[in-house]
Length: 231
Image (cartoon, rainbow, N blue to C red; front, side, top):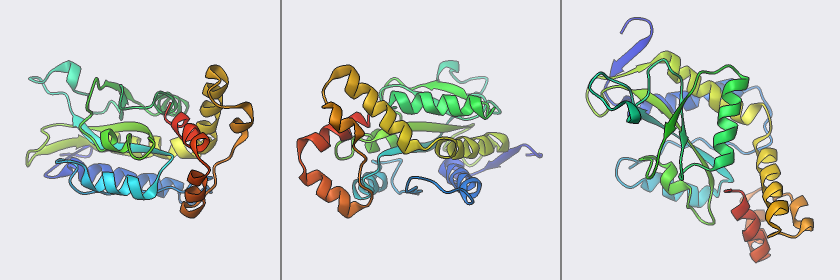
């Protein structure tokens, strides 16, 4: 549709996977301090089987679910839809970890990426709902791409919004190490609530799945630290 819009079927959720690939393009020349997994999963519309099994196998420290959301139309509810050309919608609610939401908003503003809030009071209807409770819990964010006429053969979205989603995801991992940000908040909560001994706050989690298995054998203190990643 002209130079600014795309119209077609199954843009939910092929457009968001294209945005993920765009984020990888922006990060390809950067050295990250994290292992970054990109997942295209099956059965999101049914029970998120693909995301559930992947999150259980990968054991991520944090995750961002990227999905479409309803674009605003004249006959649609304004409190449950987002504007095209308004940028990615950053989810706010119980399915989203508070520090992840704050970081997403901060990165959008720092990089002059337009964004809009999307209040999600309960089930977000995304893979994030299931990934958040995988194993001991995973810090979660939900980023949405506004899309008109969802689940029809004439879905419509703005190229500008799709590019903004890619830029926001890249900025989240690029501008400041995400793992360091997670550790900072874990230590802050540990000091505030005194539920983890001070010596534990300097703990740097081992990398690799085998190392993480042995970490779990160390017992309850490790599990407590993992829980703080989701605060």
